[in-house]
Image (tube, rainbow, N blue to C red; front, side, top):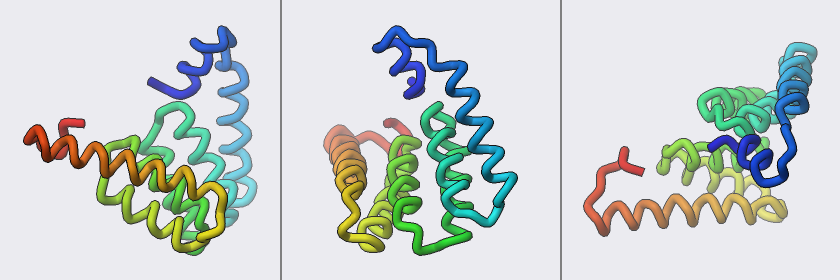
Length: 134
């Protein structure tokens, strides 16, 4: 389920008008400064918010092409890769994010993503499931 839909269901608030505006503003920021890694990261966050993981992953990867040392983009990429079911890539990206900036308070989220990916992997092995099952 998309995050925006989930929040709307829980709060009773229709986020659609604001969501469309957020997408528009993030896309405009990228158009205005295509070499700004933060703009691409922000666009990736908006895509992720709506469950558009392929677009989010592409935006985070573009941010990292611009600045390979952007720890926040590495970490967020790892989280979205986990959601998208790309376990090995998620682990690698999350580890780069953690090691790039070990004092970043958002590393809690990176460790959470890693724990989730590792837990799902253990469950698959226990019940004999293949990679594409979860």
